[in-house]
Every structure is written in C-alpha cells, then in structure tokens.
Length: 163
Length: 168
Image 1 (tube, each protein chain N blue to C red):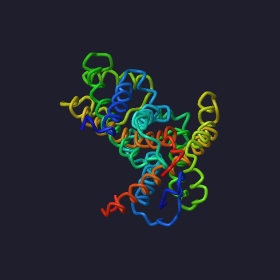
Image 2 (image 1 turned 45 degrees about the horizontal axis):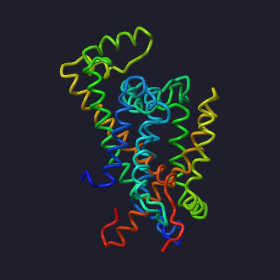
Image 3 (image 1 turned 135 degrees about the vertical axis):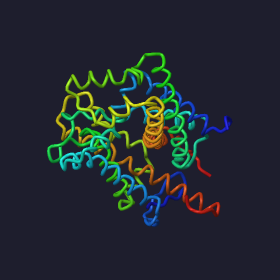
Image 4 (image 1 turned 90 degrees about the vertical axis):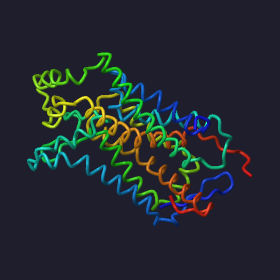
C-alpha cells in the first residue's frame, strides 16, 4: 500500500494538514472557508500529479480518490494529534472542560445542554474522542475531496502532443 | 449528469448522460447540506430545544459568529454569510452545469479559470465588508467548483463502462 502513489500523496496531504488542523490556535484557520481541510486535498494532489506524466485530460477521478484517502488520513491524524496535545496539557483536557464551559457561560456564550452533559459525564474522554474522530473524518472527507478536485484543476499538466 | 470524452488534447463535455444517479445523488447531498445550514434557525425559532446540536455540526469548518451570519426568523443560520454563499454556489453549480454543456466544455478545457472566480473572495477576505458582499463572493467562487465533481463522476462512469463493470 505504501508504494501506491495515491496513498503516498494522501499520506502527505492528510498528514501535514491533519497535524496543522490539530494545532492550538493555528487549527482555527479551518474557520476560514475550511482552509486547512481544502489545503490538505490540494497538497495531496500536488504530490500526486508531480510524478505524473502529462495527460490529455485532467484526471478528476484519480483526484477524487486521492481526496477521499486524504480525508480519512487527515481526520484520523487531526483527532489523534489533537488528543496528544490535550494529554500534554497544551489545549484544555476533558477534565477541565467543565471549567472552560463555565468560563464561556460567564462570558455570555450560550452552550447547548448536550455539550455540557457530554463534557461533564463519566467516560467523557472516550465519547468526545469518538465523536471528534467521526466529525473530523466526515468533514475532512468532504472538503479534502473538494480541495483535491480543485488541485487537479490547478496542477494538471496538459499533454501538448496527445496520442 | 455530464459525459466527458477525450477529443485530442481537449476535454469535451456533453449533456448526454444527464440521468446519472450518482450526479443526482451529489445534488441531493448538497441540498441536504443546505437544509442543515437553515434547519437550526428554523427549529430554534419554533422552540425546538436541541436546535443548537445541529448548529454544532458546522463548528469545525465555520466560525459561526452570529454578527457575521444571516438570520432567519430572528435566528442565525448555522454557517456565516460567506460559507452560506460557498455552499449555495456549489449546490447551484452542481444543479446548473449539466444544463450548460457549452460553458462546461470551455471550463473543462481551461480548468485554471476557476481561480479567477475565487479572486473576489480572496480580495474580500482582506476587507471588512457587508454580509451580502461576503455571501456574493462566496457564491461566485464556489459556482464553477460544482463542475469538478461532475467531471470526476463522469470520468469514473466512463472508466467503468470501458472495463465492463457496474457504474460507480
């Protein structure tokens, strides 16, 4: 599998941007038009097409496959790098979540009841990690695939002499 | 929705396979996504207690600041004005490109032109602009991108047909 160029490219794009998305503060760049998830797809396709010979037509289907793979890898990397940052105390851990929620509420931010229930319940860490993993994979899938398709449109080199 | 065939060095798009179930599936998914953007505002205005749970779905990909979002029935949408424009533009693109085969062919031949449509959004990001402007620039940026997944689907279908397998 490691020799598969699609998988290798997805590993680069998903790995790099997945890790960036998990960084404290830097990860908030995703709030700007999902920039990091889309960027992961674009980077993956850049690496994929770099080693490709020019083709008469843009390989959108290959790009979509690279994007889907990037989404899976990126979502997993984001979740687990995020969990490591939590364990290192660089971002608030689940046990501190109730305190953070209280501070947010004092600041006038209205939080849904279900968030408060999850964050303060037993086994909250595992539940939150699972929910986060599913959310990250789905979102990275959608926007990573779109990014990969945009990447194909941008980086595809046309074959000047087809046939 | 759109079929592609290689013609020399060009990418020619026709509307001959508009009945592709996968392309319609993509359109349905886009409409469902748009419904999710509007649903929290509608549910909240109706007094449904868990409307915020739906709004929470978008928090990884949008800042959701109420002051930068459109409001429906007094409640903010689940995505900001720019993201709403992006989502709506993409949905309109998925719906419209199969009906515009000539334009689709031109864009498929020169796909880097989609970057031109993103210039207003890139400029707008650096300014403090009105919600309508943010919405409009998002709409314009995403509309041409709606063609790209249709091209991917058509290419996958063409490959499947050539290899004699079932459609994707």
